[in-house]
Length: 205
Image 1 (cartoon, rainbow, N blue to C red):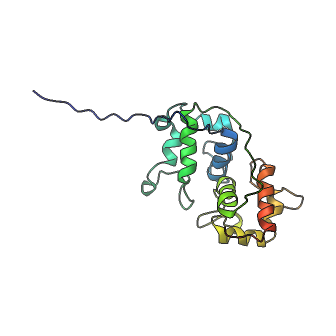
Image 2: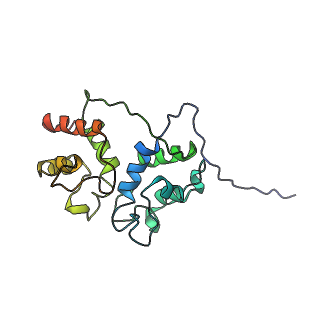
Image 3: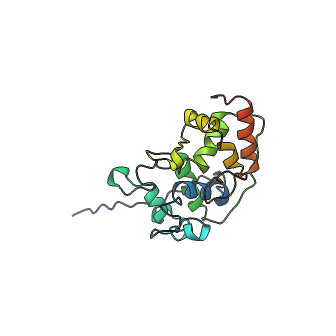
């Protein structure tokens, strides 16, 4: 007799205690920074816009990451040229991809969370780098970063602050180019953390 073996690709499952991933706080800023920038999915060209919840949901199958076009392209093989963001942009990092996957598994709702603001233990690695990875790195990375300003690591972020326009941009002050471009102003907690880190002398901690 013959035996037929079938290989099935199953959707991942969430652990019972998986924390909620919120769209407005953890998903939208990453997609706006990495995908909805000028020349890509900003709605001003032929490519599908990814500026809003409704835009993004056109590429999502709620509860099913591997059936969601957005998830497929952010986890694609970069050597095949199908990954998003495309080269020379940097791909999303593993934490950002994990958050998008969890959000889809949790039903891909238009959710928003109140995030506890730690204004005491402000460090570069625990506070400043994650803020820049979420809101800025998508545009300000790769071989041709927006405005010629990279925001990928300690050295480049410190240099941008010392350049004199970083704080004015994120606080969206008059006379400065408002950042994140096309997105909402950074949460006040994040702006406070950045200013505190600067006042501390911008330590690489």
